[in-house]
Amino acid sequence: MKKMRAFICLLLLCSCTKFHSSVTRFHKGLDVEGPKTFIVSAQKPSSKLESQSYAKIITGKLKSFGWIESKRQNAKYLVKFSYSIDGGKTAITSYPIYGSSGGDSTYYSGNINAPYGPTSYRGNSYTIPTLSVVGTGTATYQTYTRTFKVIIYDSKKKKDIFDGVVISSGSSNSFSTVATCMIDSMFQGFPGISGETITVSLYLNECGRM
Image (cartoon, rainbow, N blue to C red; front, side):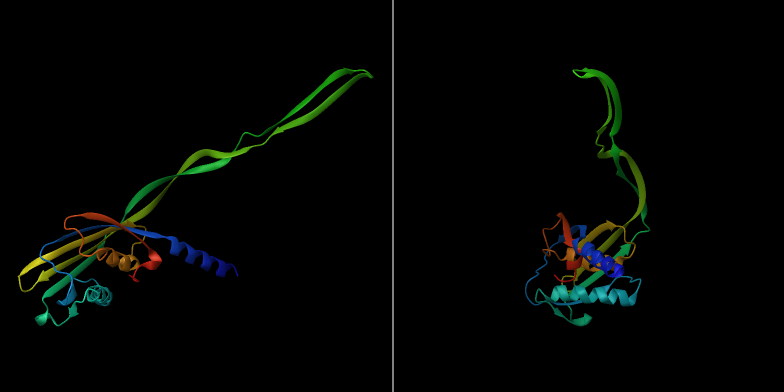
């Protein structure tokens, strides 16, 4: 039962987690709409199977514009992509420490002269403690920078007509963990305004469905 609850909590956390990236795209002479023959390939892939899975996703994105996948010798557009992740760097964050403050008890006593004679009294009074920030703590964590790049070469004009890059950072040291989000970010509003850098925010559980 405890394992089931933990699994459900993990699913809820993932569904609410957002992925943020910076996207910059340059293009000139790129006509997106209409049938265009193309082929997708990876530049210096670190893993053939991994790069093939990304190529398949990119191919699906371009097909949604009406482009037609073809063999290299027949392709008007040669679409090349690359991806990388750095070795990470250590970052420091601070957090508040909460505790109770205030709160005390006071003992009191005395004597009074009542109509029926002198009498004494005694008792205790209390003040309720409050929860507040009583200090700060620090923690270290690793953050990694992930990069995804796409270049489209026009084989007829013999020149590049699109150059885009997506950059994100986070705690995951595996590119595959965020790959679909990186690709979705690249094709968000594709081809975009040339030279403009935008920030794209996506829910992790929605990546790959766009």
